[in-house]
Length: 280
Ligand code: THG
Image 1 (cartoon, rainbow, N blue to C red):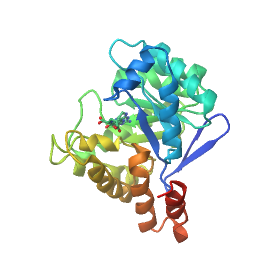
Image 2 (cartoon, rainbow, N blue to C red):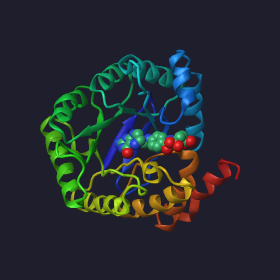
Image 3 (cartoon, rainbow, N blue to C red):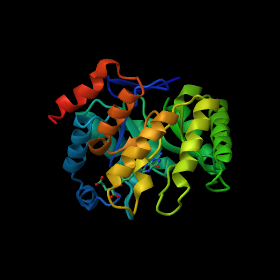
Image 4 (cartoon, helix red, strand yellow):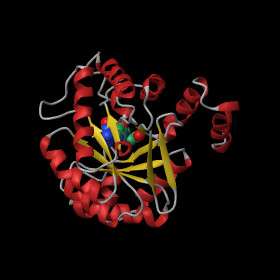
């Protein structure tokens, strides 16, 4: 199954058979004070710098999240999307809990974006599915709904199936639905990562859809996050993860290594290219 995203000209194919597509997570105010202060000043220099760094580090798509307390993200998400697309030809993943911000951003965006995210709650599906259809966007479906987040992989699969069915009913194509099985902090719940890995496997086997997740979520509150994130990434790719949202500066090497090990990188072309390109 192939999900195709587009920038101005550039197309990125997310294929369930690989290669893994990296969605750069760094345009996100979580613990990035400088992003908040510069955006509050209407200064987009730092956003552009973060975009540039991530693209050079191996990002194929950029997640754009400009949500912080007090912000008018309807205005700011659209402005940020415009500024990024004026400079870079890379598809975008629009990350906001506010459907109005997503819609405003889609109005100004060129190409084909990914909406991050729709969940299985009635109000989310009602607000977002017709917008996705109208703007020909792909969607990330989060495996949670009005009953919250379940610890049972089978039930997470059921939520994914519900979102897929509703999306298709709204006229969205199956291949434009990417599922996020939910990655949670292992420091808060010792079973968290195995629930996610089992859910990935189920979704891969039963639905055959592309799968994303916020891989850095698992290591919140722990030291040496990179080590943990890399180990988890390898296992998640083995189970069917195809387009992680992650920090490319820290994860691209682990992704390339995993793909080489899995026999998806003949003659180590991409592996070698990564290290030569980054000068390591
Ligand atoms: N699923 C989906 N979308 C998501 C998430 C998800 N979007 C947001 C988030 N989770 C993924 N993005 C991030 C962004 C930053 C960090 C983690 C997840 C992060 N930032 C560093 C920190 O907190 O220490 C600071 C920046 C850095 O130095 O890298 O960890 O799960 N669909």
